[in-house]
Image 1 (cartoon, rainbow, N blue to C red):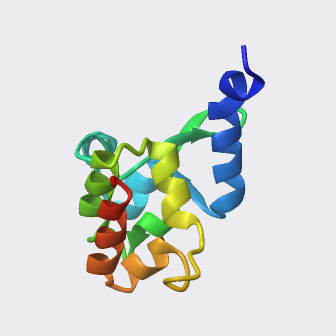
Image 2: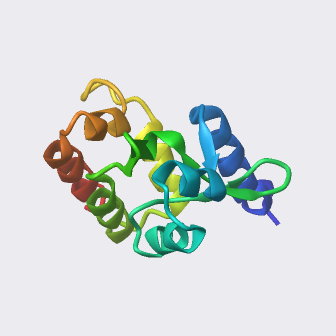
Length: 129
C-alpha cells in the first residue's frame, strides 16, 4: 500500500496541529460557551463547529479561533457547509481556513473573523468547480 495512503490522515492531522496554534477540547469549548457538553456535540452535528482528533490521545478538539467573545463565530457554519458541499472533509476545511492566501491577504479564518463572509464563501464555492 502507498505510504501516503497508509499515513495520509495521520500526516494531515499532524500538519493541522502545526498550522493551528491554539486548540480547545470539547469540555473547554463547553466551558467557554457556557453550554452543556451535549450542546457542543449538537453544534458539531449541525456543522456550526468543526473538530478533529489531535495529539497522541486523539482527543477531539476545535480551533480556538472558532470562538469569539463567548460565542461561536457567526459566519462559520455557512462557510463550513459550503466547503462540505465542495467535497472538503474536516481536515481539508481546517487546512483551507487556516492557510494564508496572498490574494486575500491573510487567512480565510481571519477574514471571517473580520466579517468578510461573502468574499470567503464566494471563494469556497469556487473550490467546487
